[in-house]
Image (tube, rainbow, N blue to C red):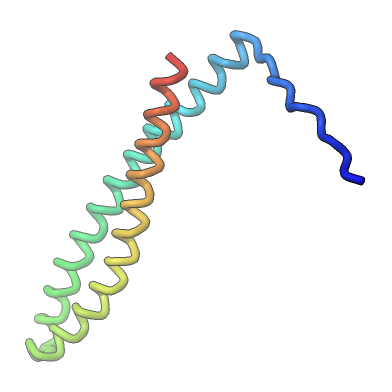
Length: 100
């Protein structure tokens, strides 16, 4: 015999709870934007610094290409995290729009 579950009841929140939740979402949205910008800056600087360092220590252009290809794979992973962050930010923005 299968027991029927009772329908879920909607939880009621106070205006204070609602505002606190909305503020947390807005802060998360701002933090996410700043993290994405910082990641972009670090990747750009890292690539430039690595090229300069490889030139300085006399690594051939052929080997530099190989080394930079390896770091590019790491950059692609970071890019995926970046894209996931954009998706999360869009979701947060939609939530904030609904909450207005």
